Each structure stands twice: as structure tokens, then as C-alpha cells.
Image (cartoon, rainbow, N blue to C red; front, top):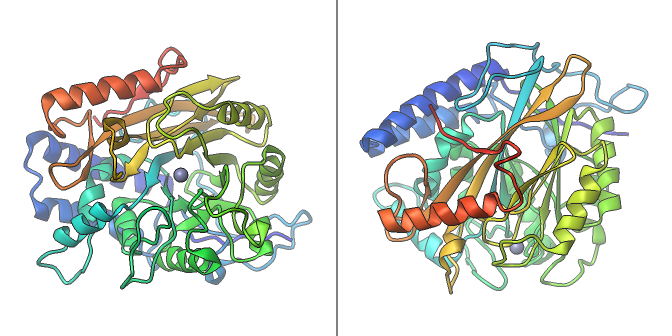
Length: 440
Ligand SMILES: [Zn+2]
């Protein structure tokens, strides 16, 4: 029997209209270079308020959020039949930087790469919290993403490592244990969910997994990839947005710590098991199912044979609409395969490797839009990407390479943009319609 938990938020139109306002204001501020702290703070609050579980806001419902579970459904197949239905089609709704919805309705999901909190980032968060009552503040590092995430119905991050107790101790490589204060920043920036299956998921053992899931639940972030119980591992994560329900599946190629004592603790890269999970998500009401694969060869732009084989197998199944990934710490290509898309590697969202290469400071934010045709089927209608560069010299901030202000220097930005663009298009993504996302 499926148990679907729905945390209900407002409809697409209201979120998107807020998104336009936030995006327009943020673009204006970024373009004119006058994004004073107070303005940014106001923007953050505008989005943060939307995440307050007490206020109807967009999206997240997590299967692991026990307080939010609906009662077991009485529908014959176990699909949750109650709860608000997705919005009626609204042809007027259109996110910033989007083409008009070609179908009866559209839903968009924004995804980003590894959140990998090496010690220099914790130190930066400590500096950024100076003069406040917070000990650590990661929001300034992430704030550049805010106007982009505001244009999507669902925003999903990848939490690569387990969370520590709030007062530490915090650890970097090889067995990470990172500040849970990152979750406040992720929520403030506009994230609704995080994937948690990675090679580091078990760095702090089962206790670290449970602590991380507890913290995600407390922050109101949906999640998939690691679990407290075998039953949770079998229950699909389906996230309700205004226009549609999205199934989220997260898997990793393996674990640095060796196999988990209980194999259900972390989902691993097994295409047959992923397809089964996707079918369970469909049966639980998902309109669209996306799969996040944490795999690849570190620092290699080209996808590994394992990544390619997995993408081809998964996208050939009608239960799966999108495959995307992370782990390589550099940007990898996007590719259209038989009408669906794979995003092989998003690079780092935020990280500070001990031996950095320039490409590890680069990343992608990709917004994928799905459109429902008159007959009911969903297809990918738009793929738009934002190239990012982490400004190591100036506060370690995530910075869009196409938003206007220089991230590091004109030369460094140009090189990063050229490298990212070449990686994205290595397998013909531009010819197949993937375009940079620019806010109007
Ligand atoms: Zn990894």
C-alpha cells in the first residue's frame, strides 16, 4: 500500500507570478550592480516565506515526512486519490526566460550539482555570519541562484554528504560531516528537495543518514536516495507541484565506505531496480519521473560507459522522463536520446577542493520543462541551462556567467564560459534545442 505524503503549496500561477517579480527585481539589481545586502535580504525573504510549511506554497511532499503523510489510500491500486488535484491548465502562466507552454499545461524542474562543503566553505559561512546571531550563514554563497530557481515549479539540489550535529564537529574529506546550517540556505535560496544518494552518504554511518533525513524533514525539504527503513526505501518519493506530480529517484554508483550493513539504506545504480521504482512512482500518481544518478569519472568531461549505458537503458523505459547526474565535479554534456534528455553531469553547485582545478569551480543549473499534450502524455518541451562559476576570491559565491556582472575577471569568466559551453554541447545539445537560460 502506498502512502503518499503531500505538503500542499499554492498553484503554479501564483508561484510563477512571484517568480517573475523576483526574477525581474533580481535581474535589475544584478544588472545595475546595486544589489545591496538589504535588497538581497528582501529577495531571500520573499522566497523564504514561500517555503514556510504553514503557508500554502509550491511543491514538496516527501514520502519520509511522516507528519505530512496522507492516510492510506482506498484507491484500488493504492494511489492516493485524495488531496488537491493539480491546477487546471493555465495557458497564461509562463516562467521567466521560457518559451510559451506548447501543451495544455507545463511543469518545470530546476536541478544543480554537488553541495560539497569542504572546510574553506564552512569558514566562509562563519565570516558571512559575522554581525548576525547566526554562527554560520551559507545563504550569501548561494544567493545568485535565487532568481533562476524562482522560475521553476520544483528545485532540487544534491546533498552529497551527511550532516553533523549543529555544533559540530565538522569534517571534510574523506569522511564528511558538514554543518546542517546549509539547509536554511538551501530553503532560503528556493530549493524544495534534495537528493541524498552519493558515494559519501554513509560517511558517518547509519546515524549520519538518519540525522540528515531528520534535518531535511525539519527544514521542509523533500528527499530521496537514503532511508531509515526498508519500507521507506520501497516507498516512492512523489512531489506535488501546482501543475503536476513529480517522482524523484536518487541513486549512487557506490559507497566510499563499502556496502551498507542494510542494503536498503542507500539506493545504488541498478537500472532494473530504478525502473521498478519509477513504476511505483507512476502508480503513486507521478505524472513525470526524474532520475538523479551520482556517477561518472571524477574530473572527466566525457560521460563514463556506466553513465551512458544507464541513461540509454533508463530513458528507453516509458516510466522515466529525465536522467540527470553529478559526481564528476566538472560539467558534462547534455544529450537528447529518442526525444528525452540526459544531463550527464551538473558539476559542482558549491565546493572547494583541496587541490582545485579551474573546472571544479564551474557548474550548471538546468531547468527542464515538461509539457502535457491534449491526449495526456508528458514530453520534454524546453531545456535551459545556466553556467556558473564559484568566485573563490570574492566570498566563494555561486555566480552566473551570463547574468551580467563579472564573476572573477573578464578573462577567467570568458574561459569558464567557453569550457562549460563546449562541455554542454559536446554531444549535440545545442543542435537539439538546449539553450542558455537568460532571465528577461
Ligand atoms: Zn560524489
